[in-house]
Structures are given as C-alpha cells and as structure tokens.
Image 1 (cartoon, rainbow, N blue to C red):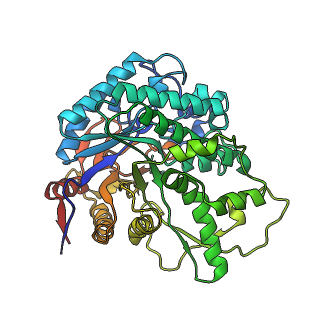
Image 2 (image 1 turned 120 degrees about the horizontal axis):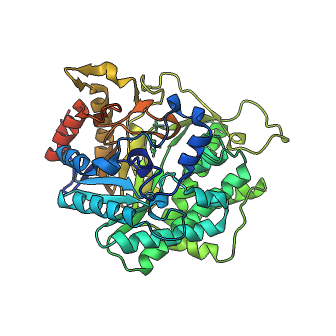
Image 3 (image 1 turned 60 degrees about the vertical axis):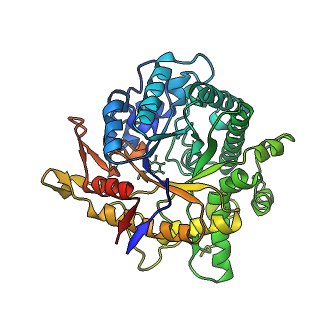
Length: 461
Ligand code: BGP
C-alpha cells in the first residue's frame, strides 16, 4: 500500500546545541549546567564522556547542512545555546555566537531547509542556575529578555520558534528523580520549576507577539499517552493522574491558556501548589501557541497502587500510581524502551477531539540502539530495524491525518549520532553514523530510506 502525505509536509530531524556543537568552553560561551555538572561529577556520565565531546557542529556546520540536504530534509530543528549567546544569562551578547547562528540559519535557508529554532533545550546557563534557576522569578524575566534578543537577531529569517524542548524533563530530572543537575528531589520545588517554566514560555510568546515578528511560535512537548492496566476505575484514575502530572501540566496551559482544574485541585489537596501572583493568569493566557511540536518515544503504562502510601514519606507523583509492565508489549531490544506505534495516532486524535485540533507536527520520534557498530555491513550501518520503526509510526501518523488531524510534519531524533546528556553515546539515534575518533560521517541505510521517502512525499509498505 502507498502512504502519501499532504503537500508541503515537513520532513526532517531535530538536534540541540549542547548535544552537537562542541566548543563548550570556548568561543565566548558561558558555562551551562552540563559543563559544570560534568566537571563536578564525570562518573555520572556514560563512560565518563562529557558535553565537550560532540560531533562538533560548531566547526562542521557547513558540511553537516550538506548532509541534511542529501537526506532531503526540507526542515531541521536545532537550539540556540543561551549560555553561548549571552554567557552570563543577562548581560552582553557574544558576537561570535551571533555570527555562528547567523551562518547556520542562512546556510539552511540557502539549501532550502526551513530552520526550526528552540530557545531552551535543557541547557540552563550556570550563572542563572547559581541564582536559583527556574525556582527564581528573576530567571523567568531573564529568559524573556533572552528570547526577545533571539527574535530581534534572527526573527527576520526564522519562521518557526519553540520556547522550550520537553520542559517536563528538567523538572523530572533536576527536581524529582535525580538524573539532571541540580539533583534535587523535592516535589514542591519541582512544581515551582514547572510553573515558572510555563511563565517563562508565556513571557517569550508575549515578546514575540509584541515585536510583530513574522512566522509562528510554539513549544515542543514530550507527550506520553498514559494507558491504564484495565478499565477498572482505580486503574483508570491512576492513568488520569499521570496524564495530569506529566502531559496536561504543560499541554493545557500552552493550548488552552490555563491549567486543568483537577490538577490544581489535586496539588492544593496535598499542599503542593507553587506560589502564584495575581498577574500570572493573564500571562499564562497570553502564552497560547501557534504550533505544537510533539516528541513521542514510548507510552506510559500504569495501574493503581498495590500498597498503601506512608503519609510520612515525601510527596511524589508515585503516590497516585504504579508503573505496569504490560505482558507481551513490544520492546526495543537495543534500548529497553517500549515501542507502541498507535500511541502517535492516539496523541493526534486526542488533540483533534479535546484541544481544537491545533497545528502540530511530530518533532521527535526515534529508536536508540546500543553498540550499533555490530550492524555494519560493507562499511554502512544496515539499520532495517529503524526503517521498520519509522515506517510503522508513519502509518499511524498517516491514519491520524486521514482522520482530520492537523499534523504538518515528521522530524526524527536525530540527524547524526549525538551526545545525549548522561547517556553520552550509549544509545545511537542518527540517520548518520558518527565515528567519534575520526569525526567521519557515514549515512546509514535508514538515512537513505528517509531521503527517498521525503523526496517522494510517500512510501510503499
Ligand atoms: C529526548 C530529548 C533529546 C534526546 C532523546 C534521546 O527526550 O529531547 O535531547 O536526548 O530524548 O534520549 P536518550 O539518549 O537518553 O535515549
């Protein structure tokens, strides 16, 4: 069967500044939390490999954009590093960074590739973290000014802006589950960080609209559909709580301009509401977006708790649910995450039916593979498993579109094997294989398949 996609469908991939640029402590860049944390605790990073060890996009940008062209990308998302552009977060703009991002944006456009730009992809400038990071409202204001600076510098050419990438991840990693700096485990502080991130997002949207910039502004959220173990009311309630905490805590403010009433009630009942100012609701209402990026990797499967909560234990999301390993679920054998392709369709239909069918696109979807070199055949990685992964997800996406979803494109994570936070190079995701020693780049079989699919705007299966 032939799966054809709408005209002007966005085919591309995503990456981020910290994961690709390199040059992390030079060219005028200020330190981010990743540089700081790696210097402090290198053993927390897979094989002790830190953020200075990348595919060096800072040097290779021109050749890499040629590769994007070879992959027939018509769009590509990367991020601006706040710490590179404004090294201390609030002061002087680093002109070397301006020149670098100008070159990248201009070259992408010259090659017919739309630049999609994220303003914050997990990389808080250390100077901002030192004054409390997202817990401090001054950082919210500083982010608003940083966003405005970006719009003024690049907004004449960038037509697709994203305030944040997966804003729930720094909340979970940095303030709940100890896998990002500053390694706090405290629900109330996590709630404040999440709330202030929504305010920061809304500040940026306000600044964008006030500046009358062309193009559109959105956010990228990692949506994890929450499936209950059974239709038993207790399991359904557990899934509902997960959805509120991990999806709707960002989805509702950015699409509806307000928080879900039952999320507010739930946090209030447990005395976990962050401090609010009277002017906040008007700001949040102004943060409604033009375009939603959806990162989809895997669903969340949950059941009601088997054991009672110890009321003296610290409050955590797990008060409301247990995770559940569904028998027979399909796993990625090379990464340990579940693969559930219909999840992409469920997300699109939920947006169609419950959120007014917003303009959206899949901004990340991907399959991480450990020790991928084992699949090299005649010098090229033969990643048929990734082609199957992509085409099965695309089938469900195609179905969503044919049933009315306003989904405008599909971006893969990621263009080239890249450094990934604490996992460093453990899981490879790229269309292009990177040899870290030689910096040699080799297109994988999936890259060739994707290039053909993008060219045809369709595939057969
Ligand atoms: C997403 C992030 C990316 C990337 C990807 C893969 O959540 O937006 O930045 O890291 O996950 O993650 P990992 O390498 O941990 O498998």
